[in-house]
Length: 482
Ligand code: GLN
Image (cartoon, rainbow, N blue to C red; front, side):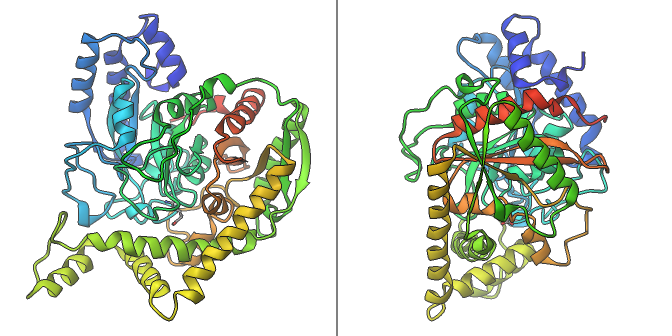
């Protein structure tokens, strides 16, 4: 058996029955990384030494209630793991070694995970293709001439190519769901506040959220069980009771109302994407769901509002990289010169573009016209969802208007790149949870993603819907032949 192909549920089952040891699984996954990382470029840093040490420590303990005991998991390189280089795919943090651990990775650690390494992303998570990485572009393992999506492209590619059993990503405007869709895997963005952001390098703090990228919906529920929960070190995290998300997974959808928003089936959407998503909706009906047409009338303003809010918050968050406190330093003739030289050399094009946009939007005289207006639009978008969720339990849409595009296809036109998140961005503005799961393949052989959006803190319902559909449709069984 090729052990690297296992899901979390399968691996843990075998480990608990003592039919598999964490070290055999680890060796298999690292062999796979060794064989593929040069061509796929999923990882910036591979941490085999740490993994061997973690697995050694597991030998002295026992599996107990540790749901990730011995499971090799990759972490996007914008989350701090104490003592392990955390670059955010930026030259400015190229040699940054965090002296502290993010809450998410410390929870994974307590659950017995094995760290495989830190995955590639668009610099500071700004992008939709990983082409904005300061180091190299990750390739889509299903077709290496294509982008894996982004910004969590390294994590999604690592899961799709079985270079880990599961991965962690972050999603500010679609960065977990869109790459999951492009790579044919499952990606869950939890409700804003469900998972602590402590130790996540901030991009846009009111939108950022950490979540799992996995091979199956069940695995996403297993990881969410581990990482969800309030944290005194993140004042925006919610202190609520966390259910057992795996308990909500059932095989039928009776009694569930699924809303289909007209605004998400737009001109310009790839026909094959539309066909696959509509077929998935039909399948959900067959499983017992009631399908209802709904409206989300402010959808058309989401991308514009997002790019004001996200860039404003980014310009403020990225002010800390000044060559003085930590990270890269390029000395100039005086203090201001050092700031300027460091930031000029340390940041890439896209990051600079966003700092400029955000600084402009926040400047006095423009603040009311841009930032305040965008926040008002955000409220309207959230109200759209509140109204819709009075009628339905889940909203079904495509995750992205296209399948994975070619590497280089959109790099010269930032607006085209920004539009690839048109279906995911509103969800972040509203703070709602959403999952992307495979719902078929285009004639090119590339996967299509179905997005299921839920009420705030109702991850259980979207996981239930996603799991029932996944098991009935069976797309998860069609793994890339690499
Ligand atoms: N692609 C979007 C952006 O460039 C979203 C990125 C993300 O979710 N981190 O901002």
